[in-house]
Length: 158
Image 1 (cartoon, rainbow, N blue to C red):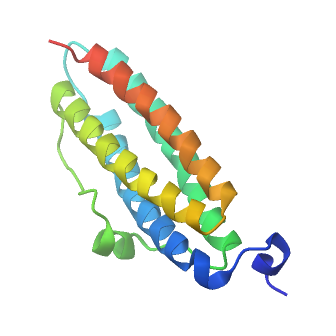
Image 2: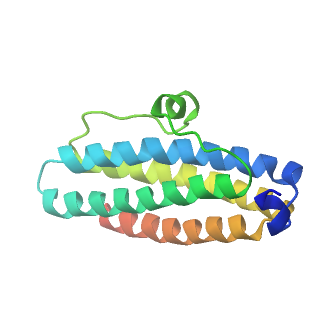
């Protein structure tokens, strides 16, 4: 028997959820790499604050990547695991050479806006498939990200 048989979810009903989780996984992997670059390359007056914040953010994303991949597996899929495959489908674009804090924060806020939109859509898909665990996961992500958007916007207020 499959995991889905035991957790009482229909494979065809969760297929779109799995596809959306795969998309989010690819996007989070690229975002993780962008955050590492921000952490390594940031310069300027806010170096100490932003260097530490970017590390906190990429560690959080690393946990989310693992959660997303495991959820794909629980729902009967196989998570993509090659970075070259992520780059083919990711909507989050790779960045290089960002040293300016305002530019990095602007990108992070834009990425959160994208994630929030995608996660709301995924939450609705999961709800339609009676997949309450994915609903809860997306709800948790949204709660964290909306608070982070508020905090980063307050920090970056001019």
